[in-house]
Length: 354
Image 1: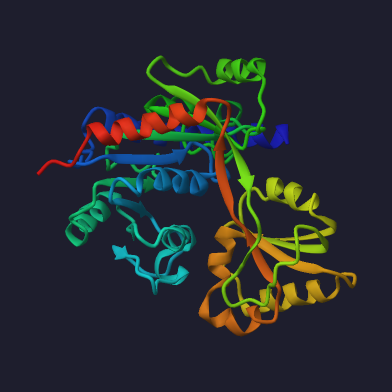
Image 2: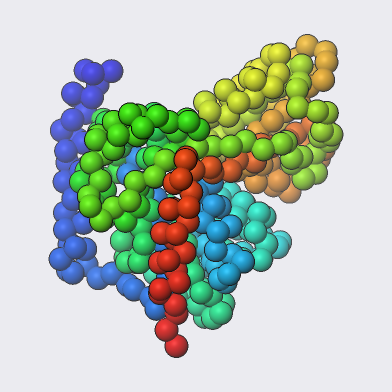
């Protein structure tokens, strides 16, 4: 592995230099950044995927939605539509992508829009939904054509950006110094109980600037929910066998969680954002039928559930006891109050002009 990184180092430097130059052009004003007269919160990372962006966007939406007319604007990764699309109750993963669909299903009362160009997306959203009072930009740390009023950078507890290197030798999208743009840094997927020594140690590695706030969050798994259209019937919290099916970057935390709720677990992994096909469902069904007799289930993630809901899979889904595990963000110790105040204070002090 070290040899591979050494061989890829020249390409990584070349890639990083390009990203650095692009940031310099934005920072110097050569490349323009669009600002909007309302609170805009960016949530993103330096690494490629796996830091928990979707659960943290969910957290911020839940924090704001009852007091402010909140919207989420996303790229809509792997959707088949183009340009600006405003989500409706009839939207599918084909129209808007899996993560935006998840936001809309979880929070039907908010506005969810997708657009490759975030600045155009926000502008179009404000025409369609002029009552909008706060915008959350999903996975937008490198999308610098919009200048957010508050930037939240996520990094995984077991994969801190300070210990990673640039693509293709590692998984960093830009040099580590890019973290300086963040107002808030959240160490995600941390243990629920962290000692003061561990917090100080990680803070020493990240070395946040004085103006930056550092928080620690964990994942909390909730009870199983049936994938709409499936044959799943809840049967308590413990199963004889679970067939776990995932198409996410880092399924290990959920696998560890499910292993504590069954006697036997089989994992069928797919690539991140994989679009499930009828052949995939046939393979999954065969895997389920091969499990030892007992109280069994097929369990996936909430994001994957959005892709299982594709119309062409409905007949196959009906034959499976398919469920997903909702994930919630839980902040450590007194971080919850401080993080919430950072978000709500910013939104409260930056009301929309006009």
